[in-house]
Image (tube, rainbow, N blue to C red; front, side):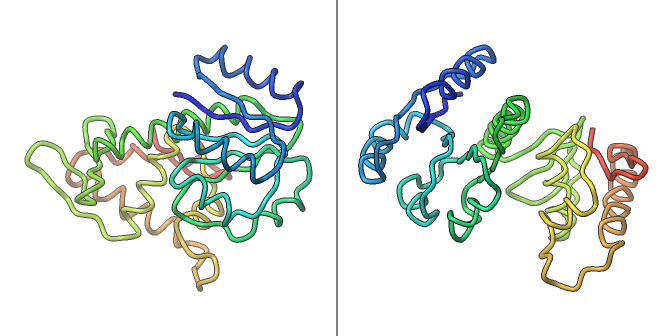
Length: 221
C-alpha cells in the first residue's frame, strides 16, 4: 500500500513517515503552499497512492472531491470545529478525521481495514469463515447453497464484515447502516442481528459468528 501525505509542518510529517515505514506502508509527501499549487501537485502523484493523509490542511470538500476522484482521505485536525470547513460530506469516498495529537495505531488500523475492503470489492466477495458474502449478488454462499439477504440484512452484515474484529455499539451501527433522521426503534439493530443469526444457523450452522458483547454491542469474528 502507498499513501500520499499532504503536510504543512515538517516535524509532524517526518514522524508520520517513520511510523508508516515501520509498518511497511510506502509514502510520498507534498508540502502545502496554496490550494492551486496543491491541486497541480496532487494530480501528478495521486494515481500511485491508495489514500491521502492531510496534516491540518483545510479547504472545501467539494474541491477535494473534484481533485481526488475515488481516493480515500484521512484528515489530521487540531480542532473539532474545523470539520465544518470541509462542507458537505459525500458517500462516494472514505473520509476519516483524527485529532491531534495523532493516535497512530487508530490511523494504521483504518488504513489496513479500508485496504482489505477494497481487495474484497475487487474480488467481489468477503470470506466469513467458510461462508462467502458475495458483494455482487448480495448473498451468502457456501458450495451450492446460496441465501439472498434483504437490503438491511446485507448492509448490516457488510458493515460488520468491514469492521471484523471490532466491537461496534448499537449507536455506531445505526449511524452507519440506517438513516439517523428516520424513525428507527432502539431495538432495530438487535432485531436484524437476530435475523442474520437465524440465517447463519439455519443454512450454515454458524449462529455464533456474530457475538454479543454485554453493555457494548456486537462483534463479528
